[in-house]
Length: 215
Image (cartoon, rainbow, N blue to C red; front, side, top):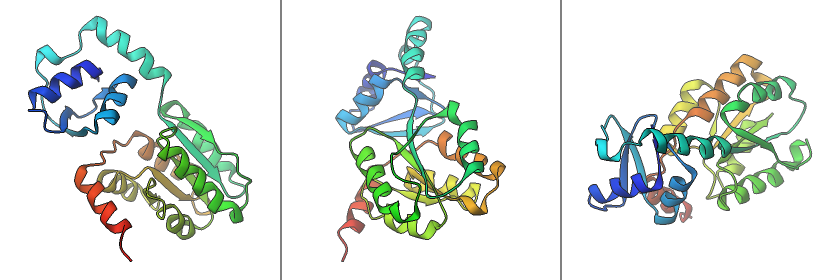
């Protein structure tokens, strides 16, 4: 089901304008709806709720909403610190699910700080939704990425780790140690990350802000 900005506004009012809206699982938002959420700082939650008929998209409205949503698929950055042919091939297999863009940083492990800075800057400016780092040392990438307030990195050790990272902390950066993953393994991790729903709740924001100020 696809929701427009007008429908979200109706749902928000019907919930008492309490700063959040609850949508059914697998709900999708049009680009204008996403802008409406960001501009008003509304928290979006998902559950098995049923939306009232008056708020459900009509046939004509749904058709109009699908087109811009398809044109503006999720933009994700990616960077690799060395030769990673199988990992790049895995990226291509999930390209239909997201708009992957390589950042312009040399393929060199010593450039990882520069790469992390670009990830953080693009996400902070809302020019990207997150990204994937294909590296030889996951520990290094995790420490550096999670120093940036706009990034929430998870190490792709297994599908369960990616699932928990996106559900519990709305992870927006997936770190994969490409020398130790086969093409099918990398593809599965990427697919799980790309399709995951991320909800950055007010409580999570508060906890991250609290940790950012600790000595």
